[in-house]
Length: 343
Length: 292
Image 1 (cartoon, chains in turn purple, orange):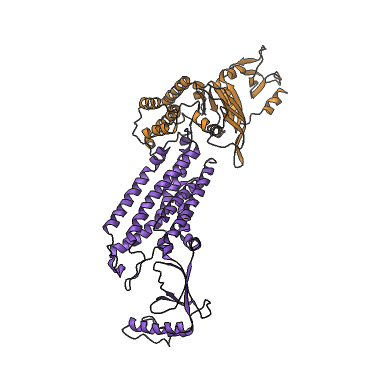
Image 2: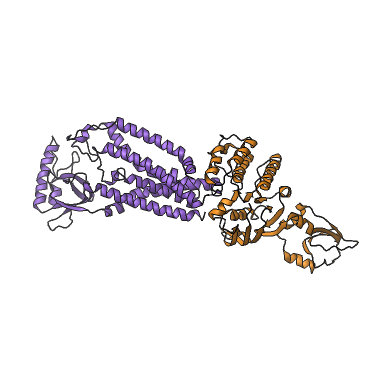
């Protein structure tokens, strides 16, 4: 039975291995060489490496839905479409053993492919994950939702989950194409919903009260809803869950009008009167003006309350999320094995 | 090696419609039974239930005393589904390897011998085989499994007349060698006549007739008599009653031997017999009316 399971997956697996090999070779060739005490890390990364960094995130985001759709969904649905289940189920192997073997082989194949991808990516990006630079932007750190499930062991959980889900959907839909579409939709929805709804609940948060100053100021978001400030933390690589302004009484609050009137308008925007137009020669003057605004804000008792997950929680969160996905895969596999005798 | 096949009150419903109902059969070990009936009669449903491919809505089915999905029963049953499904991407050799890997009693010599005699290229993808070659490949896998019960659903439907004859001859030979029990469905009476010793007629989801072909032929007569409202002997069952002009033609079971100048009794062909039983509207009530 192992032979048959492997024989039916062989072509797709070899194709996947070739693609992974190409990617790994690219990573090796384009490895960022960064000394341990490089200060402005991002400046040492060239355009190709930046693209490769983004490509790694995209690749690990799409690999799970693709495995679910192209490996998982056809596993049983293709047999039902061709009628070949009547050939294989009339051999001397029970349906459950047949399906157990196929689930195991597919899961191991998916885990090894995605595990390799993730290992290569994680190691390659270790020095530049979360890198920031004063004038060339920043890269997402590995604890933020955009990169967390594309590093470490979590991608393996997603891949196994997606594969088993695909098998089950294929058994229910009984046709390959609808099963592929449904699988992609469910996996993608999970990938979006999980970081928002579940992941923050998996790990303890830390709260920090930070006074806004030149040193801690990170950015300002001007929108119709008002002005929103965000600050840096000493804990580099932390995942910031919430960053809100509180007043002297410790309650969440809007910024006082004294502050919003104080801040200079963005370049060329010609903001409301009272703010005045920024002096030519720019950023420095704006910065100095801002500094005074921050000092006034702090004097009035306003602080930023930041709720975050510490960078040191990365691996604890990785293992917990992996466990959840493997558990979900096990539950789905159990449902598959129950279902196969009813087909 | 033989396996006793028995069903009791077996029924299978698909949504609202019963595909098979109230099917009680006892297949004699070592017999070759032809399962005949019009399209949609329930032949495939019955074979699927026997092969453990489907689930009955009611009733029981046992193969050698076990449920067909039982691991030991599974090893004893050889089943070739309608249209002889094979994996299009796997080669002929891969299929034999599949059989060898999945069956403890696999007869590799028999499989290879059959494939070479059929002239199949072992490296050819099964998806490129003709319908007849595919049927032969599927039958080879079935036979090399050394089953005690062989179930074939329309095995010769895709074969030309010559291949059909050879296929059935080869099947007969293997069955004779191993002493297996076999049930094969067909809507062609000629195939059944050539290889089967027993027959089950099924129509509208119900079993209309079952028995040994020789016994059934011996028990039925075509009776021709004048259409004068005469009552037939109550010991016989009227299967079919037709008036043609002034003549009345009846097909009866258990016709008592008695002589009357204007009544003639003659033997039936198997085809006439089976076709009479295949008619869906044939009911015993109607037969009783005529007798009364």
